[in-house]
Length: 341
Image (cartoon, rainbow, N blue to C red; front, side, top):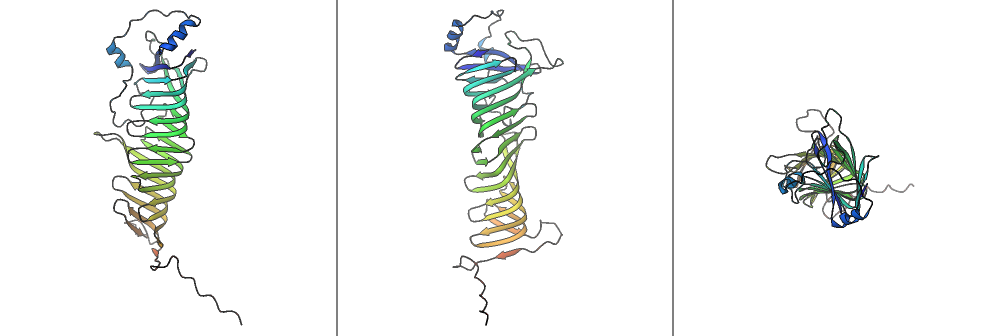
């Protein structure tokens, strides 16, 4: 079954999952469908009132929903999933998928997933959770458990947008993974980029950037590492925000006048303090200090280098410093040995 250009379907909740309530298109599609082979007419069902339409479908401008993560994940979410596509929506009943092509988008609440092609996988609801089909239902009690996006992928909410080439959203595990070139996550204050993947774990409220990951705040404070893991909190009076970033492997913290490096790092976003551990170096101009533990205040541009974490009585290697005299760009070379007689 195919629904032609400018197609739209609503996937709304059943008693225990998501079911297909209606499939609709714009006027050109309706005219085209009437010219094609007729199909058996379903039994008439009561027409919903305008107020019912508003309750079943998403509003054009959804109200803010603080602390909802990325918004599309979660199989127990009863909000409707609204899918639109310019080139049509195909329903493959044997494979139990819907395929939306051409500037496709899927919206639930305040989150919208965009892509050249969207594929929604569905399955029957288990008998213990199923309910009798709703009037006008196409498939009865079913639920969407996986959505795939290909080409010009964007996942947009009120506070952030994720960009990539391919996205997979698993509603059972409430996870989302975006891959491709030029991966980035953009918020009003932060930009996070990665080479391999951007991942979201809704149950844990954790975002992970893998492969040459970089987080930039206010175009000035930079934290880089092989893997960055951001913890998100849900304030009662506002939207979700990043509270802490853990960095693993080749960690680099950059301020206006310093570069700090270490094996691991933790950045407290609220305080602006980053702590580094493992072979730490702090470089300012040509001067460099070395130790095992460093603290960098990105708000005040103040850094400290320690031989061990505060409160740790273990004796470690002492802190070392290399200070280059003003006017020199590198340490003086040792004198050459006298020529052999």
